[in-house]
Amino acid sequence: MGTARRVLPAMWLALGLLQFTVGWRVCSASEADEKKAQDLFTKAQKMLDADDYAKAIPALGQIAAKYAGTVKGTEAAELLKPGAALQFKKLQATGPEDARIDVVFVGEGYTVAFEKRGKKSEDTNGDGLTSDNDQDLFCKDVQLALKIMKGESPFKEYWNFFNFYRLNVVSRQTGCDVPERKVEMDTPFNAKFENSVMSVDWGKVSGAVEKHLKPDFIIVLAQRGEKGSSVMEKGFAVVGLRGSPPAAGTPDKSWEPDWGLQSLIHELGHAIGKCGDEYFVDSPFGPPPETEPACPNVTRETDRSKIKWKHWIEPATPIPTTGGDQTGGPVGLFEGAFAAKTGFYRPYGWCAMRGRAVGGENPFCPVCREAILLQMYGKVKLLSNPKPETYDEVIVASKTALTFEADVLIPSESEIRVEFVIEPEDPSVKVDKPALTVVQGKKHKGDTYKAAYKADTARLKPGRYTLKLKCSDSTPSVRSDPEGRTQAEHMWRIVIW
Ligand SMILES: [Zn+2]
Image (cartoon, rainbow, N blue to C red; front, side, top):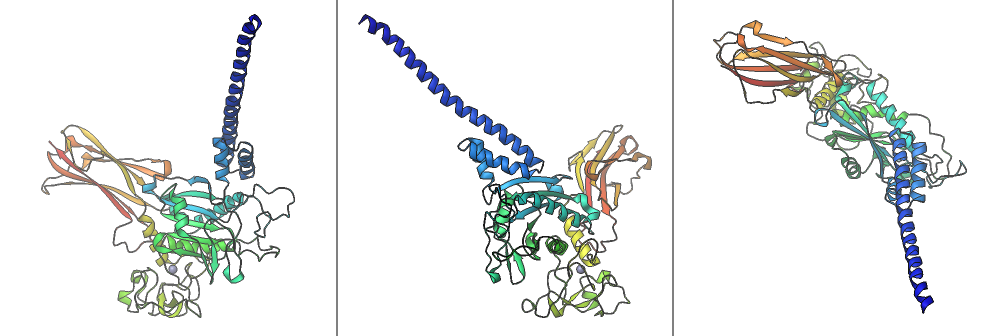
């Protein structure tokens, strides 16, 4: 008993210690794993931020495999699943979303293929291709698309009107469905090339994009596909890049040309400018509609005074116009548009809306360029941050000087006229000109110009005035702007006493 009495406490103590040790070990092992997974995930995230997918994807794969069950292990696994948004990145930011044109490029049919190991010739996901890590390729494709877009008028002159974003999405397979060839691919947005038309599931695309941003335009780059198509009213475009996928078992030789991206400019004409097709084919897609198309560059009208683009037609140009098979030349009324040879007219011989365009070849005609610009102006704010902010009356005691200012968005290659006008409510009151000083503005971030006006109110007679800051684009590319989209105005009411 005496011994037992002595042993028992020692036993309890040992058991207690054991319990504590086991408990401590379990707890600490888990926490350590969470921490390791977190550290590795942070590193992988940095690789993603640097667009180093060749390192980031295997790193995420290892976190998912080695630290399964931890928070970051689960997150890494989710990021690599087919359909997952691997990364959403801002590529160019020139201003706030509500004051700029937000364009998102979305990748379709780009795999991560991190599980691919060993032989280079191995086709691990059954898409007939042996490429791995298509995400690097998508980043390059977006850069190429941006380069093509930036080389084209009117985008290049207004490049700072755009914010660009990129959404990398994981695809299980590379390619798109081609029902005529019984090719079926497992891609996140169901890209399909059928009856010479490229399409994707736009509901799924906008769902994926809108988790991050509500953009003005979405451009899907389908890494395998042909031609392009657009949903004009929604501002969506899909462009197939490298030809449709080879039939199963066929060696793939058509990887090289960027033929598909040459239809990008044409699709942007649809998506951004709401322009119609200016081409015509032997067998049009369907019977021509009886009503006048809404597009700014296609008409059924042959009466010169009623043609939508009459402000671009010189009086000497005959209507209808013949011989329009070359780029350049006068704006007129050429028969053949909207895919139909007769009944519809286009404004120009050749325009990007009639075919492929790249590197300044086959540019938009003046009518399409004007239409695109007006749509672009509908999405930006030429004037922002007015100070004082109020639209109500600014009451100023005489003998005080007050500065009125606002930021004016200046296009990369076009001039904006900036003007301050002060008007007395009582027209008989004369404004003392020296009282009005347009303070020299200065350019700052994002090509915006700080326009400032100093009112030396001591020199203004007591009374009510309106002060207007007026801006307008003086580009010759816009001849008709009935809604005044290329202009902006801010007004302050001032009471001097
Ligand atoms: Zn055109």
